Structures are given as structure tokens and as C-alpha cells.
Length: 274
Image (cartoon, rainbow, N blue to C red; front, side, top):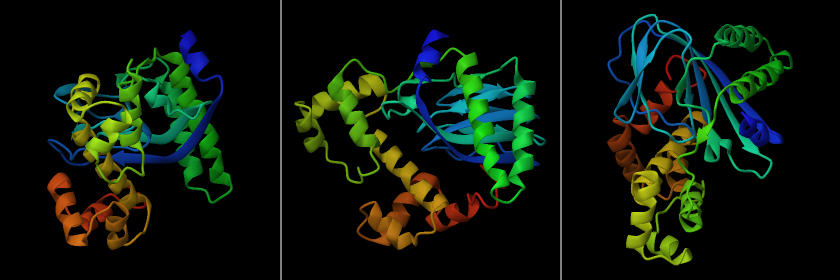
């Protein structure tokens, strides 16, 4: 556990939201879920499954799912499945996102789950209060996240490499400003050919850099749709789409729904779906 304490010695924490879900119907497989922040899902009751790539993990009371930044997953729900989700960001003293350094296991069952549930339900109580009383949720979320980090063995991040050039490519692709994919420019900046860059990146991240970039771009677009009230045309322009129609076609091809429908379905104010 020593590494856990060292990595948390000096850090910055940002609480984003607490979201509660109670599913009343079966869902065989949800749409792909992405996050541009960390997400701790606590299963309060019921049953289901979570899928990371092709591997399935059962969900039941006492299970915690730690969704790192930009990891794709799918859910299978059973009626009565209830979860409380804490969304947050945390960085080390050098400004590196903790998910890029060390992260919690994807799925774990803490022996202190009753403690977790008590904090989460207290957070729900404060959530119903107006500011500034509901500001207390941030300190409670921080307490809960730190409890998880110091009580579990952290695992190496998928973004860890022993090749500084590929680490730089990763950071370029993750940057919010990377709205256009320019393989030649990126490869040249790291003194690699495009084929070398593709091969080395895939070795570490299990997918080509262009696919990684496209997923990250989609994730950033989803964030803009759900976290801002910007017009669709403005979002399309922000992500380097020449025409809103092109943007809508691209988005629907990935999400199987239009940007406008996605915004309505994933409104955090409604808090009816993840």
C-alpha cells in the first residue's frame, strides 16, 4: 500500500457529481459508456453485469466498479439494480491525472462497503439541499475516494509505457485541442515513421492511434453535449467538422443515435439513465 500513500501525498481533487440510478426494466446491453473523468459505481442492490471489452463481471450488492478516464464499457441491467455513482477527477502534484499513473482495480468488493453506503446516502441527503449546504458533498466524495485509494492495491495504468515517444503521442491524442488527426505531424514530432508510430502505439494500447483518437474525440463530443448548452452547430465547428450534417452523420454512426437525441437521453438534470 506504500505506493498508494506516496501517489496521494499531494494531490488535487475535483468533485463533479453524484448520480443515483434504479433500473426497473431489463436491458440486455447498454450503449458504450465513456467518461472524460473517473467514475466510481457502487452497487447498492440488485444484479447485472458490466463488460470491459469481451470480459464480463457480475454486479451485486457490495460491488464497486472503477471506470477510469476513457475506458469503454457496457452494462447489462436486471430490474431492481440500484447504483450510486461518484464522478470526480484527481491529479498528482505534477498535474498528471491519477488514471494515467495508477488506478483502482476495474471491479472490486471492499469489506468496508457499509461505510461507503453510509457516506453515499448522506451525500444524497445533502444533494437535495440548496447551496451552500450541498457543497459538503465534495468533502464527503473526497473522503470516499481516498478511502478506496488507500484500501486497495492500485494497478498500473494502461497509459504507462517505457517509450517516452509513445507517451508523448498518447498525451497529444488525449489533449482536448487535438480535434484533427495528423499522423505525419505526430510521428515526425517524435522522430518516428507513421508505420513505426502505429506499430508501437498498438503494442502498448492494443489499438491503432487513429482509433484511440477517434474514441477520445467522441468522448469529448459527448461531454460537450451533456455538460454544456452550446448549439450543435457550435459543437460541430469546435471539433473541426465543416458541416453540421457531417457531424451528425459521424456521431450517429458511432452512437446509433443523433446528437440531439443523445443530449436529451443523457441529460444529467433528468438523471434517469447513465
